[in-house]
Image 1 (cartoon, helix red, strand yellow):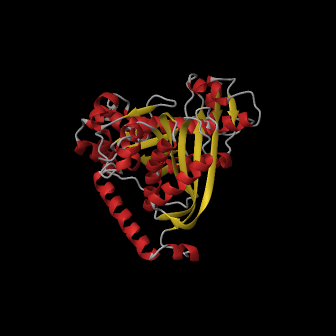
Image 2 (cartoon, one colour):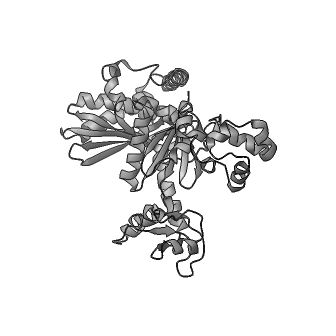
Image 3 (cartoon, rainbow, N blue to C red):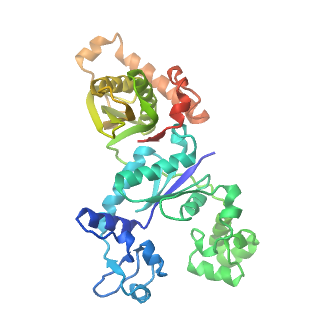
Amino acid sequence: MSIFFHIDVNSAFLSWSALEQLNQGSSVDLREIPSIIGGDSSNRHGIVLAKSLPAKAYGINTAEPISDALKKCPNLTIQSPDLSLYKRRSNELMELLSNICPDIEQVSIDECFMDYTPIAALYPDPVSAASFIKDTVFQQLGFTVNIGISNRKVLAKMASNFKKPNLVHTLFHDEIQTKMWHLPVSSLYMCGRSSVETLHNLGIMTIGDLAKSNLSIITSHLKSHGKLLWEYANGIDNSPICTTPAERKGIGNSTTLAKDVLTMEEIQKVLLSLAESVSGRLRKSHMKASMVSVEIKYSTFQSVSHQTTLSAPTNDGTLLHKTACELAKELWDGSPVRLLGIRTSKLCDETEPIQLRLQDFLAASSPSVTSQKTDSLNQALDKIRSKYGQNAIVRGSLLTQNTEIQQDDSHF
């Protein structure tokens, strides 16, 4: 069963504008005062695009005219939108998320769906993964997101709209009656104003009312859109994640450890788990990497990193692990380690021809055969894991620490 996340930035435009002002030296945080994004503050034209929580307390709603918002709160602070800023922050968010999991479907500038399945082996459960993702977004980018979790995309979308900000909510099929059916039908995804009016005229006031209604009556008034709304009210949605491959600058993975590691042997085991994850995602993206970097964050939160260029591009986990261990030996100063990470860059398509250096050719009795055997083995392992789960095949050296790794907070 697939699990989906819906990741939605809390008051995206307002949050991004607030952070930009703070970075430029402002002493006022737009998120903490009655404020909105929209229109032009000088002529009071336009509509509310985003609002702060203090503005919401005045009854100000998204999409209402600014003139109406000012009647509710005369001291309202109005900030004009900055589309170039919003695009830049959106790109930063999507890059961060795509490094966590490549299976992402961006549906707007401030929201996307993510397939949890490819990263399930790295977390104890979906809630732990989602919680770490939202915390990572805040720590690295400075703004908050809500994340909805479900085995249906529409339910994940609905869950992300529950109580805000900076929260994780689940909405699985067996939870819809208690968590969703009591909500007004206007809150149902894809249920616009005209549909709401039609449903109200039929005596349908809540999502539960719609879910329990006769489908033929709904479709007689709302046609095929009525059928879609009825299905959504009943948690019916079989749509998959639709990803659009984008050019990647790098693919990586890091993990914040449950407890500090103190020996090189422990470091190498964690790096092996990370290398397996990174190599699998490289192969899934049909990419190979020419550069490998290792990051170490000590218990003091000091971070150091080191990188090297490979003699030939690769997506083989064994080679990535060997390289990462060599880098770690050069980098580690013996202090307790809180976080370890591997990142690959200088990516190329896996079908591109590879030119071996002469010394590489002389070092192997038959490099082409060796490479073919490694690729075939990796493909076979990927197929087994894809069919039976990431833990269907585990390296023996990881078995003794598997439980600890599963409990870690991991990110890419």
